Length: 384
Image (cartoon, rainbow, N blue to C red; front, side, top):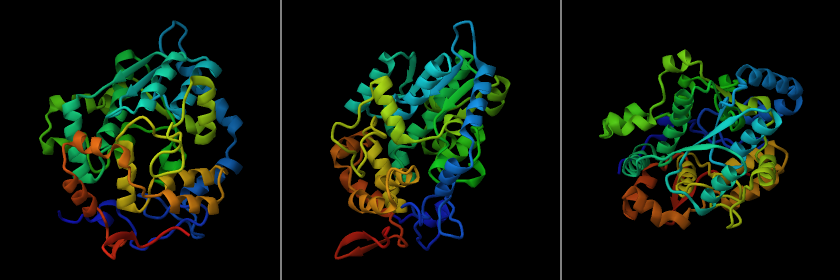
């Protein structure tokens, strides 16, 4: 299989550098580093500690919610989420602290894990109406196979529906406010232009979450309008005419995934990974619901040299839960661990052979990141 030009596709620098404060490298798409060698996600975390007036932000939140609050028993805010720690935190606070009437909306994962299914059921039982959208199994599997081969991201079909479905439900139920979780571009390192965004319009959502393989792109791979209908959001004009507004809860509240884990355990019955940790990392409470998840993170490791442990440790360093030295050790121990637990199921789901799987994987190994040593692939650079 022909090697992919990862540098050109993602506009990556050829010289690999690591942040001086956390463990992320400049290979993360759209991330920026300042003149001191510090990534923009770390600089944003410092602003959260020292420059943002969170009391004022909460006043802004109350003003926003008052604009959309309904007193007739109808739903007044859409909360997208899986029933995981973050969406549970947002929904619970909106309902019990701020008196809103949220409708929770779940775009179902490709293949539920046992703990993922248990957590969404625990969440619903703890006091939330929920609408779940489940894709056509045949179509979604075909999409996963195409996305795996074409962009090295089997998780892309989930991303497509994750954006479109809450907007469809908001339009159908005449709910004007959608409250998502964090601003990923700010929290994890991305476009500086989006750092202070309160939310995203449709154009922004498509730009940052549908990159490289959109719904329209899938038509070139044999998918019909009928098959893609469930993945299409309302048009920008429809969203504006209906007055639908998308916001980040993380703009109004200090976003701390570890603290949200404890919050969700207490309030919505959330349970951590019963295996003790997730493959590829040391953490036990994030991205638990889909058996495809591990391959999303593994492909990130192959394409960018940034695996699941890097992502987790970088955020926990910024939040003050780890030192950089601790983060480095965790990354070097767990990053790039192969997600073997669901490997056979992944091959069956995508209808591919193991030989084809490794052909695709190796086609994404950029020579500026990877080299073969004694017949084995090794990263040229590791965080220190």
